[in-house]
Image 1 (cartoon, one colour):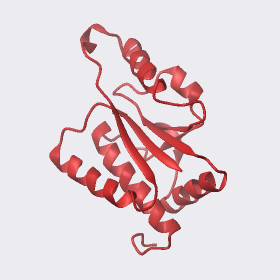
Image 2 (cartoon, helix red, strand yellow):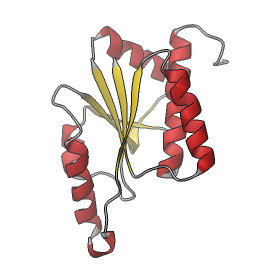
Image 3 (cartoon, helix red, strand yellow):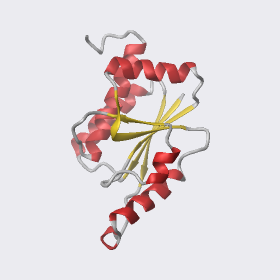
Length: 157
């Protein structure tokens, strides 16, 4: 299964980039993974929140194929423990899901067209994290999920 994390805007903090790259290198031993960055919108001061969400959604939807299984990382999504996330990923693999796309929205969240396209929503926490930190937290959790599936000693109960 190919997994893509689709995000808006590049990561700017050096320590976050290093952490993300660390887990991306670890993940390649378990799955095909891509961090796909859509450039931030320009001249957003002239756009309303709704217009900005629409423009971001249009860019994101161009990156998603009809056959992709799409999950939005959304504060109102389902929460998983690390073990439950690993079981969910295993279920997708068993069901022959060929491509999983996880989407991180822009600063104002998702436009309705993305909610309609998505197969589901997941939440990392009830707390709010910066869009850049979500990337690191999620790739670490994805790595953790694969080590759990392989029975490796990274995760402790």
